[in-house]
Length: 594
Image (tube, rainbow, N blue to C red):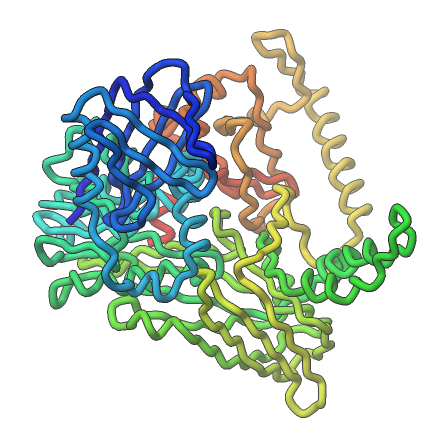
């Protein structure tokens, strides 16, 4: 078991050695060298001087570190060679002893066997940033659903030993502690583990939460656990292959222990979207140029077309573009083995609900937290408030036309690769015909298309004249004004005149949303067309000053009104949408998800 360890060495002189063995001072004064043990097989060394910051990893037996004299340490890096001269023999010995305690890499772990070193390095560097942790934590739907699932099942957590896999900032470990956990092991392989340990200490819960540095596949725990919690889902549920690590952790689970989440459902449906298809297709026009600064690019047109169509598209869409009911592939985390996720084949059979061109397959996922008290669902469906997972669409190389009532068959084949992702093959066929189409995609290289604009419903779903509807509303409004002129006008305390004797149009004051937040789209609900549009955000408005870190102040939730906060409650064309990071009507909206 590897706990977080930070050591600071003051008064260290740092010199750079050239190929001839000559040395030059890197800094004009002695500096502070910070040593962090963030991985059982390596130590992170930091020098945070403003003039030139350095950060590198030393490993036991790696050949990149040698003792020089009593106080010197020679470090050979890919880009340079450094000589660290410590202030005392004691400091030099302490630095060397810390490196010698690093776990020797005598055998490859399950993780290292299935993962390219370059991919793993990039992956852990990415999740080592506080900004990335913030992006996930501010996903209100994600974070609050996890908290509710844990707190609403106290019987599964109170007095129990919990394992948090890929703990990140440790937020799930805090939820387990809030639910009465006896002990929580928060295991994190990236350098964010250092920050997680600081959070635990600052919140005075280090007697319960133990932050462990390392990979689940490589660490040891002092005891078996009652519940394993994690947030292992990637785009299309399986990207990043973190689910395999989640399942591998069951080697620490007591018989009858629980997995939170307990199950994952991957939904698949055919969709039609001519605009999206043409958008990808037209990108290739760039490579048609024969005189691009005097260079003929046309020979790369076909490879470019293949590359663009190999990209899964990450964004959101209107559910009505789906032309058939979704099919569901279920992964039971309680019983599944990690090897079950190495090759996944999903047979498809769709009964077309409408005629139209099928441009590809749409994917999203739901996960369930099956507790002893309640079951709570977290959904990334396009009918639900948007999350940072969005939805994913995979285009066919050639669209096919299917009629209502026809049977569309095929398969989705996902084969895991060493880039912590999947090679994805989709195939569809219209039964009774020779119409077939397919495509192979790289889930590691998605196209992030989300712009924040509300996705439009597919064309052709308007069955009355929009122009006539608009003028009918105008005529109705004029008639109301005429009645109010007869009954008298209303003047408010600011001297503004209202020609409507009814209640104020904005009786329900919506909380304003931080300007830096990403708006989610959600789905529009049917209702009367007379409801007013919600007010927009304003930096000068009073609620704006009540914001906390890009979210709505919890103080706003104390209102006795049943009006949701920024949820899709408007009944007109203009609609409010939830924003990632908002605290929005926690009690009611999350109850709908449970």
